[in-house]
Amino acid sequence: MHGSPLGRTRDYIDANDRVCFSACTIGRQLPALRAYGMSSEYESVVVFGRAAVVNDDKEALHALRLLLDKYLPHLVYGKDYSPIETEELAKVAVYRISIEEWSGKQKHVEANFPNAFWLGEMPTRKEN
Image 1 (spheres, rainbow, N blue to C red):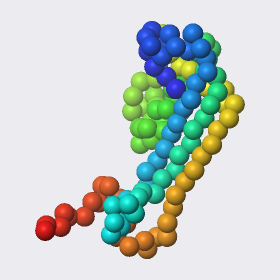
Image 2 (image 1 turned 180 degrees about the horizontal axis):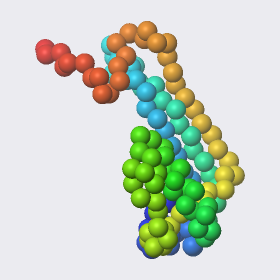
Image 3 (image 1 turned 135 degrees about the vertical axis):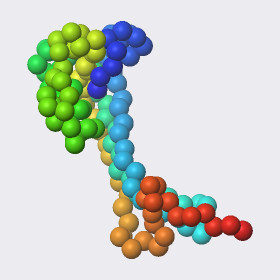
Image 4 (image 1 turned 90 degrees about the vertical axis):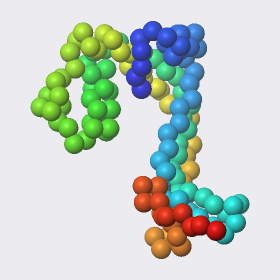
């Protein structure tokens, strides 16, 4: 993960390196006839471990490149935008989490689940 080199995250990690981190993805929305039955497809993971500031510039650059590649996969590093400069790297803190425990869960249903939809393809609202 990354963030400001100064601030709450850095203060907390300097005081106590134990962390919890979660990530999830949301799939299709799964409507039902009763509110209680409404659901979503999802995948999630929670990790517990210890965080440390990455002080090695090569490792920090590699981590930041992985983030850029993940969230901007259509852009080419060094071609569509300039590489990360040393001065820029000094303005960000990169953290490594050493995972001690983790757990995950997921929910997927069949492709033809009745009335399932993706949020970006939300059906038109039905009027009463």
